[in-house]
Length: 332
Image (cartoon, rainbow, N blue to C red; front, top):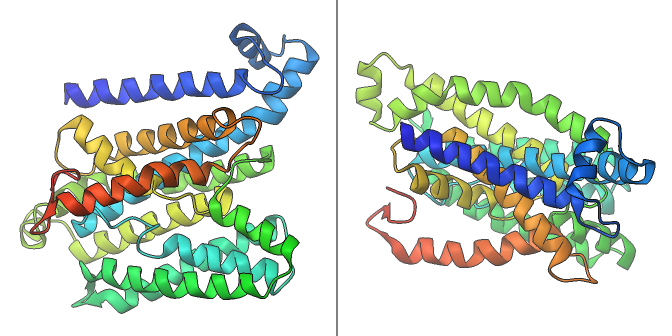
């Protein structure tokens, strides 16, 4: 328990340091003292503008979306007992991507309408995957297999739409599909926060039943847990978290996959380590965004390229180290 608190505190401090760096560095360098003064409304007008109106919404979207991805992935992995069960592997984000591509390339939509379409696509995909993988009233390990098939199908649909699009529209869709925090506004940050308040509250309320479910369905029933109802509630919460994060930041790859196992490895405890997973997701997203902005100058990369470069090798390690359904990396 004490180690868990230390890990959570360390992750919070690391996220704060990364946030300060993101707010300070850029085309206009702002000293850390001026960043703090900007929050008090006492900075020079130019620094105030860059810190509060330009950079802070992007950082907040990164923190919130990363937390949602990390929390969603951790719930999926703990619920299905599989370290591959994350929304970007089982098709949730692919559904959002295909819906966003259809909104832009078929319906001619843009802006917030694309985010709404992506949210609807993610939720619809999750429902189909759940129904196809459902057996005896619950979704089991087949969720991953069905999801991988859905990912392949939806990726093919997205590729087909891109091949028929003009260059400008295809470029817009490709940027969204990669995952980017560029140009995020206070409207997007506040909308994301508004959705996450009830979703995170629901996830934390279901944390204890999730830990009990890890002991097995029969034992969970013996301890008074309503297994089917809790599993459905956890699945709905995890899907909604991933869908909302994707609609705000795009289908940023591998954040949901790596955050849960990394957090559990640090905590060295059982269960899903939801708080640590959420903080790890926020940290992975913001550190990746910092690298995307500053390590490849004069080019600024979408954050999804950096997370993909880190997450791809991690996935290979996860697959190589998996033996007989257990993973040294994931802690099972």
